[in-house]
Amino acid sequence: MTRVLRYFLLISLFFVAVGIVSAQDDNSIRGYHKVKRKETIFGISRLYEITIDELIEANPEMKNPDYELKKGDILRIPFAGKAPQPAVAAEPARSAADATDDVRNRAIRLGVMLPLHDINGDGRRMVEYYRGVLMACDSLKKQGISVDVHAWNTPEDGDIRTVLLDDAATRCDLIIGPLYSKQMDVLSEFVNHYDIRLVIPFSINAPQLTTNRNIFQIWQSPTSVNEQTITHFMERFKDYHPVFIDCNDSTSKKGTFTTGLRRELEQKGIEYSLTNLKSGEDNFKKAFSQKKQNIVILNTGRSQELGVAFSKINGLKATDPELDITMFGYNDWLMYTRAHLDNFYKYNTYIPSVFYYNPVSPATQRLQQKYRWNFHTDMQNILPRFAITGFDHAYFFLRGLHKYGKSFNGAAGMFGYPPVQTPLQFERYGNGGLRNKTLLFVHYKPEHIVETIKF
Image 1 (cartoon, rainbow, N blue to C red):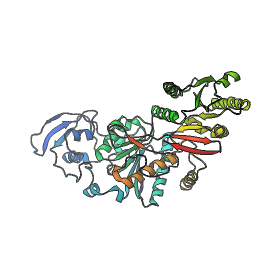
Image 2 (cartoon, rainbow, N blue to C red):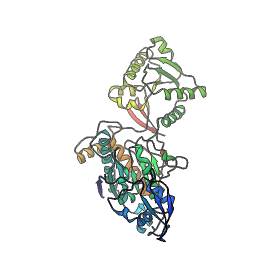
Image 3 (cartoon, helix red, strand yellow):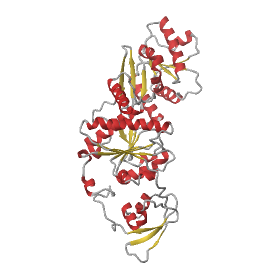
Image 4 (cartoon, rainbow, N blue to C red):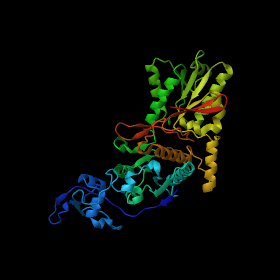
């Protein structure tokens, strides 16, 4: 397995617009293009229905590593077919051997385009994520799956277009990145042109998903997660009595969820109760059903209010031990296990999330130990663990490509990989790319067992 970490900060390039005049002398040239702002080299080649290789062949000065395309430059536009043609039109920069081989029968070429530096938190988190990717490659090698890794530092203030000059980038089967929305335009066009799969691992604005079928977007918007959570709540707890507790948190952003859930309950004709953390014992108790299982929903994710809620519910149970109470929480609660774990178990707590970090899991402990051995440091104390996220992402996509080739779409059931922390499953977004639709209910059972219910 080849591991290459390359840092490219070389050339500022490729701002172009339209403007063509007729050619007079060279019969291989059909015209000229005057460079203006806000075009890309990909756009120029598409505009004239030629390949990038044909454009460069007609303009030999572009082969100079110091060449920089500037506004006002005049480009020669050749007739299509004058430059050497690739064997497969979908991959114009690749050799005939590359175009006809099958990724399932050779080393997978992986590119990582993330801020890989020690300047700020973004860089340090992405370095840890990248280390997890390398650990996944090591694990897959033991299964006979080879991966050639090329990584480029793409900081927020850098120009990702300089990275795309590297021939290794054009030859990738899969690229993980970017971290910044402003890098998406050119990278989306690049992967579409070279038929490369692009995995966007974190939360960025990527409208290109609507049109580019090569994109996998892992991050899910809060709106999407809320909608899924409400749907699965209604299915699983349809026979419970919901109790909403106002926690008087003016900073909370959980109102979108609680309002949506209450609206759905009302449409289904399911009665629910409202109470407040400041309510007296009698009024607080009136919100709970004596006949049905109660499920409690707070309108905040903060630890302090959660602690007060548990205190009031513990007092209620002390006077009425027959009350059946389940708690339904938020992803934030996964950070509070040190303070509230006993109550999570006691009240049969469900926490919706897109990941679950289980520190006592043998798989988690093995990865953390190997990380310490390989990199002589521990993973950052952040949820989710970025190294494990990188491991899960890389393992999922690389194994999928190895098994299914370019037909791999990440759909549920394509293969049985048990994720360490971050499950994935994708659905096609209209005629565009693929969006992750995974949701978990992390369930703390009274028997002091944690189960993850995957939807």
